[in-house]
Image (cartoon, rainbow, N blue to C red; front, side, top):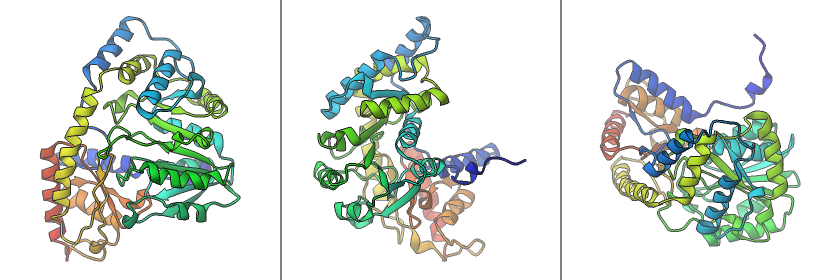
Length: 396
């Protein structure tokens, strides 16, 4: 069968691949400890579920506007004002079937074939693949653990060319946990000020999982706001991964373009989820802050555990629920059966020999690292690290 060459331009997400392999082994009766997926291990708060039940009873079962219900977009505007000090109007908000769709809408709306898109590494796996799917050119800027895996103004300026159309980043960052301060964002904003044709996609989906204070958005700088597309959603902060609702805030021209694209792909997010979204955005935040407290406790323990692993270096994440340790010491080592040549091999070694699922750093643009999630119970985290430590001790 001859299929589209488009399929050759991008790869399957490594995060989903590892989850799939883990499920297959689990189906064989193997006890897999999952430290790979980016999904809170909490249930959706009751007041949000109650709103969804009421929506069903109220017969929210029909097509919805492509951009989302007006009152949902108004709720997003209230959230952006309350939490971020940002003024948006409903015509600047697009509700999508998850933040991943919001990102795809934005990239395909802004970028033309052959345009350069700057992505600092490490980065979330989908950024580069959406660009490639749209036939843009990815330009990676490698950041360092020394700078907390954050791009500097000098690095940004050196990367921009007359073909640069878009810059994409996340704060808090998946996978590194890096969080940009207001001062750091201001430095980047001053560079962007010199290049008025460059758009910025700011992925803020981990906004509420921030261990260092209020999240700062690059959209706060008025001279830059019209070129910033904020991406956010309900998955991480409200434990609503399966509900599939993301949103963007952008200049009305960009928002209308994204609405046009979305109208051909999926139309709108589901009616019931949108009614639940209002309860989430306007409702009690105590469950969210309760999750944050649990993540803080886990982060502390995970840092203790990773520091017990010999020859592994790891910076403490300021946000999200991952650590991103350097593991290159083990490249070239063997357990007498398998040789570990790279991070991919090490992750497969952990999966097949230790029965722990992690994700290779290569997927995130940093081949010397692996990503380990602490969105799991403390018991499973302890269990997973014990198995990882035992597996590493066999590599000589």
